[in-house]
Length: 175
Image (cartoon, rainbow, N blue to C red; front, side, top):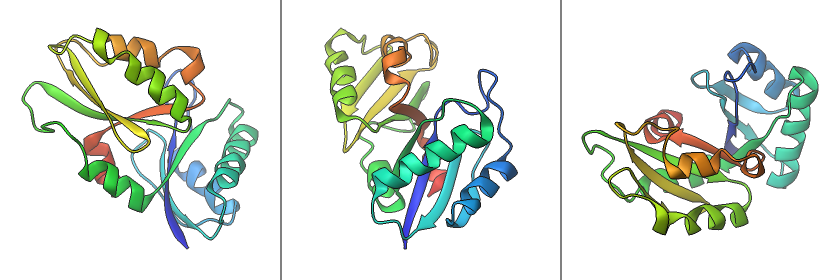
């Protein structure tokens, strides 16, 4: 069995409301075990003996679409990989006045495109660094998490099916 973390994009925002109990029930109905939902922002811990993670992701996305009637996308990572991602956070996560984030992507080309925006970022507002299948992102809270150049770029429709962002503190709770 492999321990996974499913990170759902756009849950409980923008009119897409999914109760944690219903979300957990859906994952269990797919034959997944050890299912636990964490917070109300679309985080599901579970175990599976499915050997093909891409197929598993597609199966979960299809079930979410069918059950909850929205265009569902997830990023699926093993718990082991998530632990390595969290441990490798390259910035001072406790920096006063700044928030630490990790931007996940299921499409490496989209990460490259987002990383290409780095030279245009104002380091007084936000900084990014590449990681293993992620971008590490830290931003000045005075700017706001939706007002930075990277936030505006990542919000573009072409990134919606492949990316999602989590605060580092949330990721630590998941572990």
